[in-house]
Image (tube, one colour):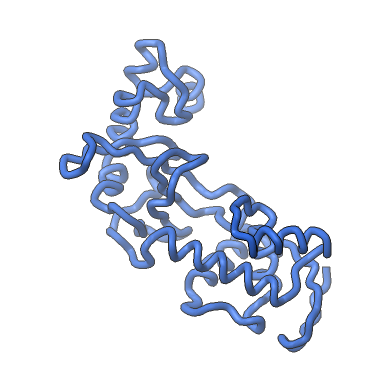
Length: 224
């Protein structure tokens, strides 16, 4: 796929795809977060446009601008530079809404396995709070990120994240998430105790031995 440099005020259809490997995609996502202002057409590089196209293709929300743009991109076989700029600004806005932008605590989540966790909340409305830790999918722009959600992996709400190469969690309720980082095993077993479910896959546990270790035999076999 060839790219031609043109002035930003010239309308041109860019047939975009993600360029480079995982490292390049991580750089793109970091650029999206670090620019510090909205994108202009002259900011749109091939890597940024490719990330915008991939993100738009996987978009499942109901924001009419993005829904319409997704249909138009599919029909036209790509995004214009102006359209890619619009998608990048939507990505930036979503990132900024999701979590705070400054490190929330100097603790590292890289040693926390993907799974379900619970922490005690003596100052909260409920006795415990439940959180999901999972990593961005390989081969996407989110590869290398560690995400924290509340409410489950499929329908949870963002709480925070840790960027690739970082050792600092950025997000909400750091006093709770630091408890998971401090002792992931204890937080995982607390989840299993309170829900009766496997902390690795959230399947219901019925065997006493599985309940005691917090996971079923299949998940346990992957860790043995």
